[in-house]
Length: 438
Image (cartoon, rainbow, N blue to C red; front, side, top):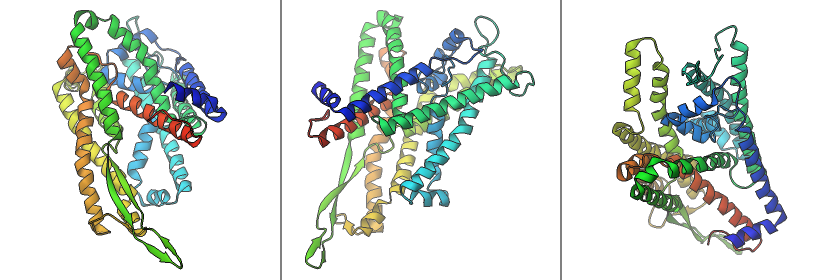
């Protein structure tokens, strides 16, 4: 791998792409350290660190939320907009027609995704600002001072704050697209990857210096073993696939013969990637965020209700993890079926004169592929569900309550690393160099 990396840097164009990606990540980390005015950074950091629900959002923003930087929202609004557009494409006829128009149609859908990101970022920024403006600060006052969008005196500063957060999200999306075009890997994924990796030193430091390391050495070692086994499992599941053989019928035109070749359809065990986890986390986070708003209410029964919801939807509760597991499994099947329907594999095979041995073209092929996909998706869905509740399982087994990387983080880090290495592999093989993956 080291030799392959050296070979990559010997190529001027590939070296330029790698250095450009690193430069964009440095710019991202620099921007993430610029806070908005009126924030108690230390108090906000403590509040986010002690709140498991906000911790997930902080992870996607590259620790920008804990300091409420100008990119505190991260690329999460863009991811949400992308998911919404992907789900709406097969439902709305106009979007479905655009998706069938090739690259031009995809560019138009991408433009709509950008437009949808703006209001989503504005709403998410407003919700977080209201939450922080209601939380008391250890130093007196609140975590965010002077916020009130419906107050005449604070309207202009509050609007400027929300526009800044929205612009920060769009800036990260733009940087991600630059990385995709001129760098290595998928830009948005690289941005999330950089944020997760940037938070690792502090997380590892807190684990090493914390009481869990000194008082439970065996549990900590066992915890690290579980984390390593999980990473290996993620790699195997992400790379696992069922190959369906496909034959192309022979066609004779004049003196030439076409077709008659054989290939296969790779049905992945985990076709949904990390999307089911994002869906499930979004739903599981929502009740907790509502409880955070109600916890400062002046009505006693609302505060009591907020406390009950917070306990029920705590990531350390049994109910939370069971519901989380079921949601991940359900969303895995749902998203896999949506993606499979969009690919229109049976129709394309029939149009190209291809068939699966022993299966009639058309409806029978669709039923057969659906049956196989349901079977292999079960393995991927159960694995994703197990990875999702891994923090709860690891804490119960080892007694260590802090996980180095959450389930979504592990999938992102491993998935982005594999995808980036494959792109470098392809670039090197084009130039007859031995790549990273052997």
